[in-house]
Image (tube, rainbow, N blue to C red):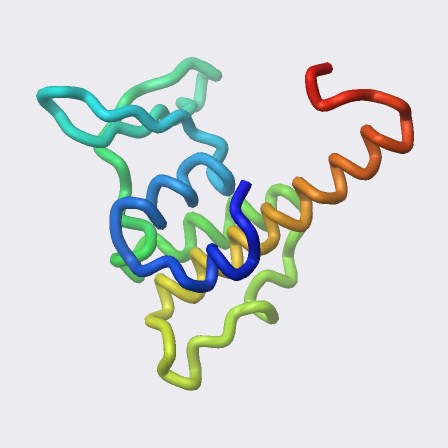
Amino acid sequence: MMTEQEIMLMKPGIELNKAVAREVMGNLVIKDEILGNMERFIDINGGFVWGALQPYSEDSSLTEIIIDKLSEQGHEDIKDLINSENGEFTDAEAICKAALLVALKRHRTDKLIREALGESDEN
């Protein structure tokens, strides 16, 4: 997982999109030799389907998908974390970065819980 600083320095594009797909959406991301960057989505039946990597950090129409995913995970206050009003980031970029910061916090919390329970990262 990246650090807060690394997240904030990311620019909209492939790497930020891949990070959101993996860390926020929980999707596997691969690079296919023919089709390019692909993302594995879970379908309504619990199976999966492959599709093109979504441009999460570049397309503001995808922001609701990210917000919905975080709400499902109990982070309904995500809109409070987003600060795109100062013009530094676009809405899509700001939401992606806020979502990754939430994922980083969750990752750190999970690690602390595992350590408190005496579990190693390999378990």
